[in-house]
Image 1 (cartoon, rainbow, N blue to C red):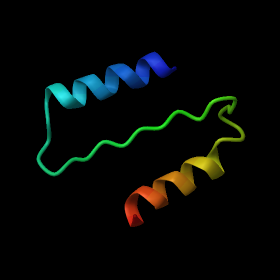
Image 2 (image 1 turned 90 degrees about the horizontal axis):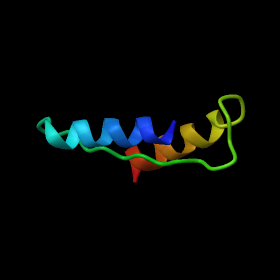
Image 3 (image 1 turned 30 degrees about the horizontal axis):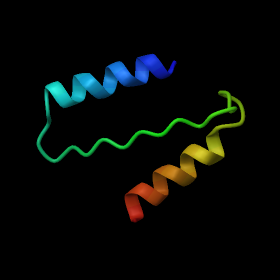
Length: 49
C-alpha cells in the first residue's frame, strides 16, 4: 500500500497542478477498519492549520 502512495506522490510532483498542496501520512499499525478517526483528524488539522 505505501508503495502505491509513493507512486501517487511522484506522479503528482511530476505533473504539478496549480494550487495543489499534497500532504500524505502513513499510519503504522492501522488498517482500513480503525484508521478512519486518525485520517479525519489529520485531514482537518492539515486544512485548518
